[in-house]
Each structure stands twice: as structure tokens, then as C-alpha cells.
Image 1 (tube, rainbow, N blue to C red):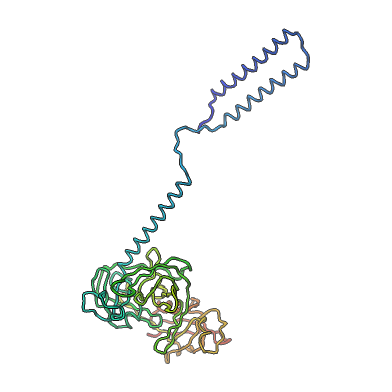
Image 2 (image 1 turned 180 degrees about the vertical axis):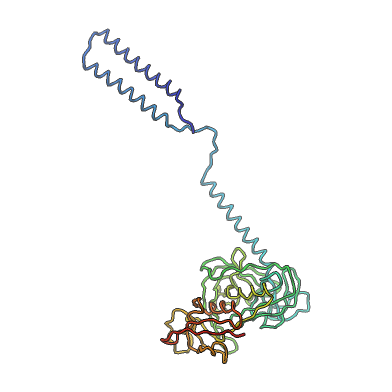
Length: 406
């Protein structure tokens, strides 16, 4: 930007002065010729001259503040530029998600309870013949997270095939049938493992992807997409005339089939938020995953020390929202805590005075909203550690100290 220079203004005012002077001389000449002079004409001439000077001053002020742009500039169409950037961003984002998923697949493994005669469990055999399922590598030194119903219980043997085709014998080093999770160890190092997200912060509507081996060889490492449909779901499992409840599950409409069990449910950035476990067979688009936070302390312990000393509290409990489905005679008006349905005989809880029907609302400084909250906290403790439970027993509230067992 530039402004009108002072020398230019001076020349401009000289021109105005000359014009006014010329007008004055013309008027005077006419007066001389006509030799007629009246006070009225003098007044008019004075007003005209004054107006001319005012006009000149106004032009100066206005002109001196006019911003004059250099003719050397680059024109841009803002709207078009924004649209082009948006399209590019969408393409880059889509490519990034595809790249992340492709890399994530490298950390997804196949697991079978039966050893195949071939070089890999991914053979022409069907999922039902081999008990084929999925697992996800969670440490670089060979710890793999899956479902207990895929790997078997603790100390069971299973067979693992990596993405590169390498086959390993696996040993189940930890499992929990109540939450259907297990950890398998294979003798391998420098494995590519997945990052675990914070499943406590998931939101309904977020995009997720499920990866697994839904049928067998032909469809190994299938990727399906969907959203988080709901959280903290409770479902009833009926097997061999026995009923149980799985609580605090992540519900998703990403397609989950039997062979997907044990596979990861991930964010678009590749972080694991859950482990796929079951689907509702009587409806489409309703599958469930176990939140990853519950097992984080166990994975960290194995990663750091190669061992996990599991502490036991000696109770079986449900979220209070399950109470209406149980024949307990207990009011379902409780809005927080977990409901104790069974106490292990001579276990830590019974020894401390916990009884069936108690509502546990807090452990130490941690408020309990779900049974997984209790499990996650207990997994951070060791045998012989003491914890304080806040108990509601009818109208009575009390604190009970429990010494955890092995």
C-alpha cells in the first residue's frame, strides 16, 4: 500500500489556487466592464471562493488516505482453494486409514487348539475342524491376547500362525473364564505388536474396525468396519444348560463371526479398544467386544517382569443393572456398585465378612460402577495386599478390610 506524497499535494493545491484566482479575475473583469457593483454580488463571490477552498481541503484529506495497491499481486479463488484442500485431505485420510489397517494386520494371528498336519493352521480345514480363532500380539517378546474359548484355559496348549506364515506352539499363561480372555506365550522376539487404547473413553458413534479369521483359510484376516453402537452392555450366555452373564461389553455393528473371536476391535489409528468375543446370532449387526482396559495391568506385568501374580478377592458379582434378571428378592433401585452373588468358601472375602447379597460401592478410593472396575483394580494388586471395601447391606453401610489371596 502507498499514500499520496506531500509534493503531489502541494502541486494539487497550487492548481486549486490558480483556478480560484482565475475565477476571481474573471469576476473582477466583468465588474470593471459593467461598472456595477452591489453588496449582494460581493457576498456571493466570497461564498463561492470559500466553498472552493473547502472543496480543495476535503479532496486533499480524502485523497491522502486512499490506499493504492501495487499492480503486482496474485489473485486466488478462496472457495476453490478450500474445496481442493478438503478433497485432498479426505483422500489423504482414507489412504492413511488403509495403510494403518494394513500394518495392523501384521500383528493379528491365527490360533487353533488342534495342530494341523500342514505347515500352517490356515489350511483347507474349516474353522470348526481346527477350532480356528484369532489373537493379537500385544508385546514384542511373544505375548498374544485372545479369548479363553479360543485358546483354552490356563496351561493349555494351542498353535499360532503369524501373518508371515511362521507357525509356533503356544502356552496359555493366563486366562479368566468370567471375562473370556486369555494370554498365550510363544517363543519369539522382535514381533510387531499393537498399541492399546483407553477403552474408558470410547464414545457411541465412533468408527471402529474388526479384524479376524471368520471362517477359515479363504477368509483369514478379514477386516470389517462399523461404529460403536453402545457401551457397558450386559448379555446372557447359555451353554450346556448353564447360564452366565457377560457385562460391560462394547457393542458394535462391525461384522463379527465365530472365527473373529479373539481378534482386535481397533480405532482408525490402529489402537486396540477391545477384543471381539460374541455376536447375537438372531440379529444382524450386533456383536460384542471386551474392553481392553481390564487386561492392561496383566499385559504390563508380563511385559515388564515375565510373570503375573494374580490376587484373588474370592467373590462372584454382577453389575447392579443385572439384579432385575436374578431371582434374588433384592431391590433393583441401586444405581451404583456391584452385587455379590457368590462368595468363595474360606476365601479372602468370606474371611473378612463379605456375604452374598452385599452391594460393594467402592474399593479403596475407587468407586465401582461395574464389575470390570473391580477386576481392573484387583489386577493391579498382589497376593497379601489389603484393600478396603465399602459395603451396603440392606440399610447398613460399613467398611470391610480384605486381605487378598492367591
